[in-house]
Length: 489
Image (cartoon, rainbow, N blue to C red):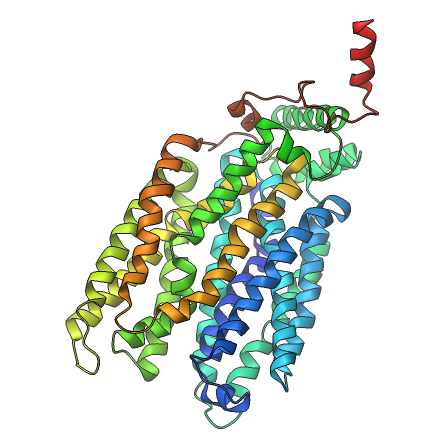
């Protein structure tokens, strides 16, 4: 079946990433609904509104961290399906909410579910992908996040036309149930990751899955070679290293790889993209763009990123690699944010300034375009492929939970306070971080991984599974350990 089957697997698994984008974006319109604000007796700038946004990210922190255990215990595919079931419950609670407490619980559950899926979907895609197309396959994660934002925005825009009933906000929240059902049902027809199957000792099934994912009619030898390399690497790791969370912090090579995966997620958040995605209506309002025009610009903005991302993952990412796009993104976003701040400093409240409004919208759109050519897809690709098999589940959980969601929770809570008119200096927090931390770290520390197998990436860190591990991480039942004892007698 080859690449088309592999792509279909990535898309249906990526529906979990669609929920990431949809659940993140849906509240942008919901919290602007007069009926929603009136029903819960609050205002758009009240702290409780920030809490409704922030608890989603908070729930995602715990969901992502929990995913480290579930991926190792029940598998990559079933973890994605578990997330969809939890999200289904959260969506129902949100759509049927009669109190803020019910809404908050629903948002926590949705966040928990999206946290699970945000770290398991890229790993599942990465472990199933061919090295030559892994960038495109895992890049589907960001593509589906973007599609989720698009759908949430236009559903919210259409629903907002009903100004008299709660349909304006209940329907957008209820729509989340559809992709949840699609994930649970569709993934029943796709296999588990071949690397996870080898870990379970199901080698014949793993070989069949590799064949189904990568066979192109003439590469039988390559598939056999890939299977042998996967098998030898996993067997060596299992023989030498004890299971648990500690090895990825204790083993120097693995700790360094965990730092890479976590930092790329941190740097993604520090572009400021999620602040823009979530609070862009406030930013447009600060520019003097209000009403239906505000929602329309939001809808157009949410289309620009995914279209750019699609072109990038289809034609560029597996050619240009990972490092060059990240460097380009760091510099480009920094320049765009400086320009946005400059325009913000010239805006005068209550005065029609069409030229400045167009400029302000342009540079926010430019951030989205540059992000979609760099950190958007590359952060998920790099974080999922840089970790070795033995710690890929827990390492991805830590990187996504701490590097992505914990930081996202912080910005979701504090951003509304700093996005008032005239507080354009807020952008310089991200500018300073990009120049002082992100740029030199990526340039001097990150490693290019394009078109390398997940096992070949071990060599970039001077590593193959061997006996040089510190006390505390060695598996006491390892046959290799017994051989070492005998050789020393």
